Each structure stands twice: as C-alpha cells, then as structure tokens.
Image (cartoon, rainbow, N blue to C red; front, side, top):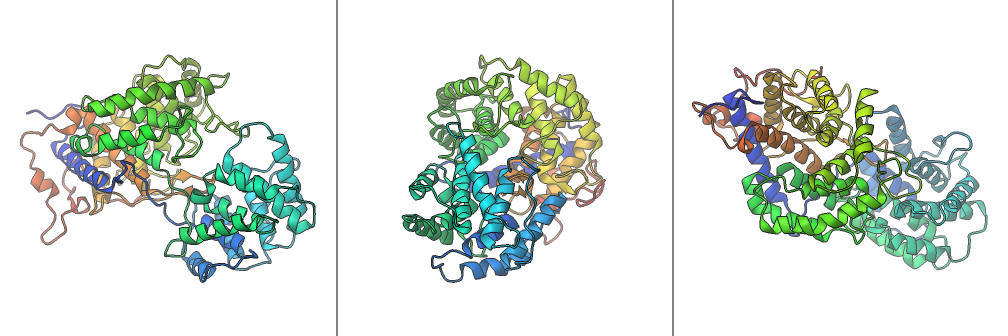
Length: 560
C-alpha cells in the first residue's frame, strides 16, 4: 500500500501520529463522566485563592477552622503568570493583600470618567474589603450604583449583576452611607440565578461579605460561607469555574470520527449536549449558565454530521437540537451581521474566534442564516493585520478556528497558514504566547490549520510537529499544559481537557486529510521500531525515538 501523498509523506511519521492519537482517544474515553460529559478542575493560580482570602478575612461570621491558614500557606508557592506585565503586577498585589500587607496602594482603575471594567471593579472591591489606605468605599458604592442604574432594564451577565450589588452594599456599609431597603433579598435573588454560588468562588465570597453586613442577609451569607469552605481544595486553593458543556463540545469536535471514540463515547456525549441546551436554543459554557455565542457555535460544530460514523442516536440528537440553536443565532445576530460573546449590554466586543465558530457552526448545519458580512469582516481582520482570538492565547488557535470558518481555499486562510508554518519552533512546536515556549495546546491547532490547506508548508513541518506531540505526551495519553484560556481577561487559566482536546484534534485533522482518518497503514513501516521504548522503560509516547527519522530535530523546550 502506498504512502499517503499529502500532507504526511513519511511512513514513520504517519504511524507515529496514529499511535499518539490512539493513546489520546483511550485517555478521553477513560476520563468521560458517567453523564457523558467531560470537565476538569483548572490548575491553581493566584487570582481565586488570593481574592477569596482577602474577602473572607474581614467577615463578621465565624469561619471554618483553618480555611484562611491553608490558603495563606499555599499562596507564596503558586505559579505566577508572566505573559503580561499588568498580570504580573496584579498577582504580586493580590498575594501581598492576602498575606496581610496593608501598606499596598489600591491598583489603579480606568481613566477619569470611564466606567470600570469587571476586573477594575474587583480591584476596588478588594481594596475596600482589606481597608487599604487610599481605598474609597464611597466611590465603590457610587460606581456600582451608577452602573446598575445605567444597565437597568437591559440584559447583563448575572454574575456581573451580583458583583455590582455586592459592591454597592459593601461600599455603603464601609462609608456609612445608606443601603437601599430590601437589598439582602435582591442580592440573594441575583445569586440564585447566576450560578456564582456553586461555580464562581470570588463572586460568592464578595456576595458573602456584603450579605454578612445586611439585616436579613446573614442566613444567605452563612450558606455561601459553607459552600466556599466545601469548595476549597485540599491544597488550600480555590479554583476558577468548570465548563462541562464547553469541554464536552471540545472533546467531541476533537475526536469524533475515531472509531473507538465513536463506539464508546460519542452517543453519551451528544446526549449530554442535547440535554444541556437552554430553553432559548443556545448553550452556556456550563449547565445552567446563560447562553453565549462562543459555546453555542462550538456545540453546533460538535453536533455537525461531519463523519459517516455518527450513530443514529447522535444524528437524531443533532437534528433535534440544531434547529433551536440556529434560531438563537438568527435572533442574536447584530445589525452589522456579527455576534457578541454575551447577551449583555456592556459587551461591545466582536471577537473573531466567536464569530468564526458561529459562521462555521451554522454552515455545518446548512442553516439559512446570512453570514456574508461576518465572513467579509473576518477576511478584513486578516488583511489588516492578523487573526486574533479573544479567548485563547496561542496565535495558532486563531488561525485554525477562523481559517476553518472561511474554508481552506480562501486566500486569507492560505496566507495565515503560510505565516503560521514559518513560526514553528526548532523543537517542532508552536508557542502558547508570542515569544513563549512551545506548547501542545498551540501545536495541535497549528497542525489542524496546516493540514487543511494543501501546500501551505513543507511536509517536514508536519513531521516535526508530530514528533513534538509524541515526545510531550505522558504515560496517561495526555499532555502537560500552561494557562492559555482568558478568564477573566487579562488573567489566563489552564484546563487539562482543553490542552488534550487541542493536541488530539491536530493529530486527528492531520490523519483525516491523509486518508481514512489515519487508519491506512504503510507498507514497510516498522511501527514497533518507532514506538518501542528503550530497554526497561515504561512504554509511553514520551520515550518514542524520533532521532534519525524525518521526525528528528530539537527536543521539546526550545524556542525560536
């Protein structure tokens, strides 16, 4: 049998990619939850643990034994983020605040007269909670109150409304100002519909501190405190929220079409996504959250009938749920033909990756929603600079996701793919951030983008990328990761499921374009020689030898 002519020309690279993908599929099947979903606890970082510590420390309620002590012991050793100087400075400030340094100045808010962002409101809230010199509780109350008034009657992210109400209460309580009557029930009601109490520890801690100062608020405050104590991990940290719908959609998109995945995991995953659909037809990133454009577009892509292996159950679910999602997208398309991520009055950003997911998702279901202007806008974005993702930091992610929406034959897709190929590191990978080290979470999308565009790069680029993913895969069949997802911006967070899905999808897309999803075997290739580890070694992809083959090159870790 002949070697596939494109895009993989080396028999050993082909066999190695197949082996690494098989291991990734096995890991995905093993890690699927009984309800058909995937979700993983994000890695610990400074933001949640420091902020919750600062917010619980002045609580007038009795805290469970050891809660703050465990958090403070862990904080100094938590990894710091270096991708932006503002984040580095903010983490240093947060750690100092949580450890009791009251000499710190408040972090600056926006420009004069500018409404603060959610992040800036949090900084104001923390400074007031900690009683820092220079903190202005009256300004916190006034800012929250005026923002609530401006948003009155308009859609707003539920957790943002909770933070604004809590800020108004805390600022007024600390400055001696009046608190509107009935605020305890208003704030408690906003909490019930936000998902914050069970998913967002910082928002829950802010609400706890505000409610603890209100008549009638103590029972609500105590329930939040019990939930926060339960949510604290054994290592003393609190973590950012899980995303069961988003993670499941990513995993299905990444591995659907691999026979063992389809046989063992696809039907329950599709059933989960179908039951997680909101009454309005869209999906939130986690069950119970408001629908957002990015998750809705991504679930549409996951439910697309792109492989003949889709079962009758999966196909029926796809048909049943797609119609509602199409109507959601039609209803929330903006007058300029684009979509915002959130159906929230304060969200004015048009995110390229979000728009691309809906363009591609609607096309995958042959929806009669006009995306002409959205496609033109995405083309203009590439022509006037480069594609950028709002939600993930690797440049390769933007190239892969937006290029998929426009199609492999589009000139903008080809131009972006050529630029991406030139950015490969000597170790075969691509960086999570411009100028950073290679990352599996970036290398997978790069493989996806390049394998879809014939002739965008020499075969050696793809061979080296396969070698990088083989060498970085661990014994469990997954990959190590670094923070790449924005939340809340400019902070980043790492979810193991996201790294796994991105790396695996790159291999699957590469093998799919090579023919029959990589199931073709090449004559004369000695798979055992490629994947057999050294004498006495544990048989993992990490011990795969790539020296002396077309997969050769620098070992992972170098940068360009």
